[in-house]
Length: 283
Image 1 (cartoon, rainbow, N blue to C red):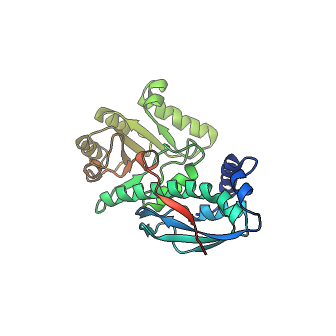
Image 2: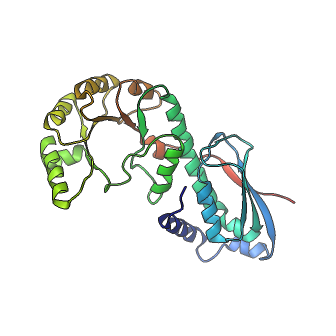
Image 3: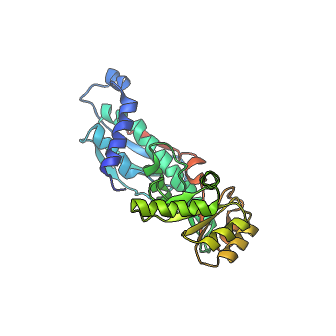
């Protein structure tokens, strides 16, 4: 993961939240000059994610801590694996410990969950997407983890794509009015953003297709049979996406409909963190 200035700042804020005016537990019982070694131990099978973030956390806490890395983001990991070893100030490694684990456990959990879903649709032509259902101020990390798990990112935020959802359409006075307003707004602002429209019925699909002006139609909470019919109606004139109410039990049924994309909020908000642990190495 490329560590940008934005990521550095987010990590800085995370450390400040945890450390406050000092790691008093470590400061009180471990002399400043004590050096030690720790290892990141895998305690559950999954997909690894967040090593570069951990490295940056450690750098910000103490840039003299050394990391000997054995595994990379995207690697399949198993209980008992050692991802990396750390050597340096015992005080500082303990100060960084929880922040390292908070990032790596959640990111690895997302990558693991995503990988499970991607494996379910192997052999089909569908692309799985994440959503904006992310932890506040963790989106850049969570969406990266989705990609490590093998899926793709939907829009990052409200600014890089227009999605006209049911509430937009209702407030605007209908599908056609919402589309026309979105196009006029882009022209006025000099924007060139893709527009996606959420549909709630096959009649909505026909209306969007007849009106035009958008790049993608979303089938919201459609059954697999309705998605099949929607794909047939659109007939590759626009991109198609299925979303809403799709579970691991029904995912394959949607994947074989011919729809281009399936978006799954569970990648980032229905996940369990992967069990990882930083343990002292007794020399």
